[in-house]
Image 1: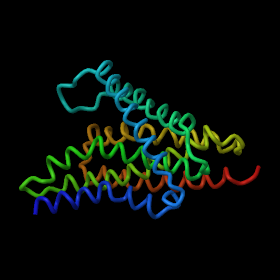
Image 2: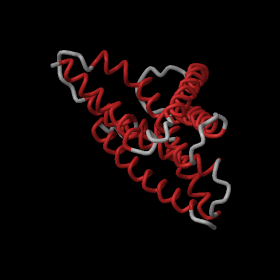
Image 3: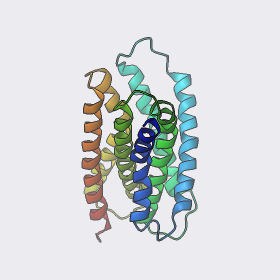
Image 4: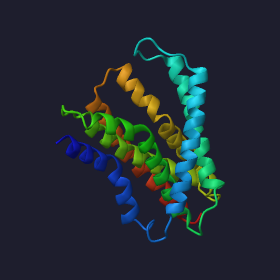
Length: 227
């Protein structure tokens, strides 16, 4: 039963990444190399973030929300944006379209994030004798994270790869990118300051990811039209 629970949670956490790759044209264009490169860039970015967090943040004795510490986390979190910029603009890719490139990069980025932050807790905790909903919520959170990373990659491709885009949409694109980049601090505020429980926070993340995906898709479609 414990192994069965582990495999269920692992499929919920990592399965959507494989389904997205196989169900979209990414598999037809063989973009796995781009996704792997993006995942490696994510790991490098995560290492830089870890060093910065260990250097500039102090260890809190309690679990309260500290605005100053969270502001530093937000600033350090923008290292992810720099890493995503490098993955989209500096890596060598196969001759694929902008549409497929941002999806491959976002997919690799999200998968590396899930492996780094969720694989070990799943392996250690989901095989426990006592059933808990924690790891199911963790899998749902990974799905929300996948959608958010794809949305952020789409907005990044508009900011850095799309030269001709309506000027009226530029502020909206940057505002949405900032919201997505600061989402970890937003959820931290909900958990610690407002004391939201895990189901409520995960529900917020799922709804937010769908809303941001819809907005990003509309912006991407609008920028593809000739000016």
